[in-house]
Length: 124
Image (tube, rainbow, N blue to C red; front, side, top):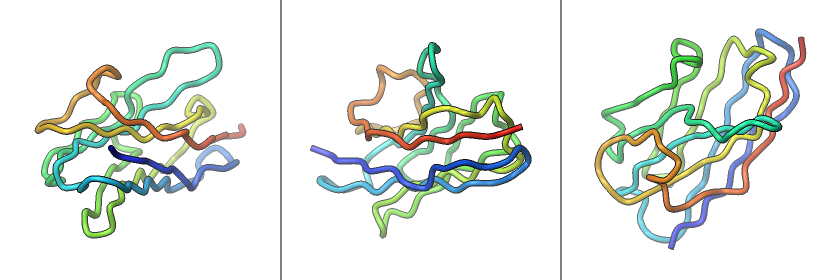
């Protein structure tokens, strides 16, 4: 079993930055693919960014490329999402997700474990 706890959300003005953190506990983080998803009101949960267990491969949604950076620190059992140049359309509840396996996956169904999420609100 894996438990995930997100933190770092908040209210920020457009153009600002936030750094989300996800702390994992339970079985070793080293064999997990990790990802960040987000869900805005009345919208489907969507993939934001993913990273392999080694950190060697990252994948981003087109809407966040060049603005968001995903990273991980296996020694700290943590994964991060640095969000820069935030836009009002980035407003959503952000979820950390994890799964056993190699490679990055962008589909919600490819992740077995989820945190409760953290709210990000970007004002215009």
